[in-house]
Amino acid sequence: MVDYSLYLVTDRSLSRGRTTCEVVKAAIAGGVTVVQLREKDCSTREFIAEARALKQLLLGTGIPLIINDRLDVALAVGAEGLHLGQQDMSIADARRLTGPDIVIGVSAESLDDALRAQADGADYIGISPVFATTTKKDAATPLGLEGIRRIRRAVNLPLVGIGGITLTNAAEVMLAGADGVAVVSAIVSAPCPRAAAAALKQRLRVEK
Image 1 (cartoon, rainbow, N blue to C red):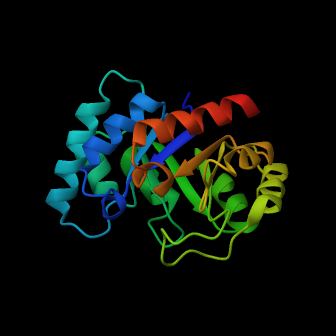
Image 2 (cartoon, rainbow, N blue to C red):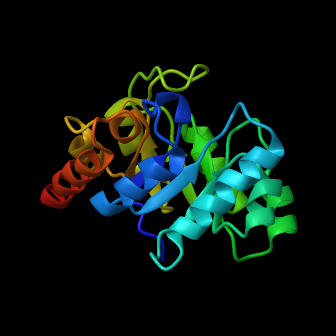
C-alpha cells in the first residue's frame, strides 16, 4: 500500500545547483513518502543513470520511485511506478508491458479525465493543476479545491493534488478530499529541502 501523503516531483532546473540525489536525500530525511523522477531535457541514457542513482538511494526506505512519462526508463531500472499524462501512452498499453506489479498513476485535468483513468485501471490519480503554477509550462486551467471535491465524490482511487501547492495551502487540499499533495518547488527550490519537507509533513499530520 503506497502512502501518497507527501509526494515529491523532481526538477533539477529548480534545485538551486544541487543534484537530484542531494535534494531527494534531504527530502527523504524530512519525510517525503513518494519520489517521482521527472526529466524533460536529457538523453535517455542520462535519464536511466539518474533513475538508477535514485533507486539505489531509496533502497530499503519503503519509498517508491515513480518515473514520469517514460515506460522504458521505468522498466530499465525496475522502478515501482510510472506516471502518465493525458498525451502519453494509454494505461492499457502500459499495463500490457509492465504487468500487474508496477503502480500506474495518471494526471487528470478534469472530472472526465479522472473517471476515464479509474475505468481504465489507474492505481492513483494526480489532480493537475489544483492551483495556478509556473512549474509546468503547459498546465491546464486550475481545478481549485472544488475540483478536488467533485473528483473525490466521483472516484474511489487515491487522489494526489499537484500544482501551486505550498505550506500555506497543503492542508486545504487534503481537507478537500485528496490523499496526498505533490510538490515540486516547495521542496526542490527550498533553501533546505529537509526542513521544507518536514514542515509540510507536520502540516499534513496536524490536519489529518
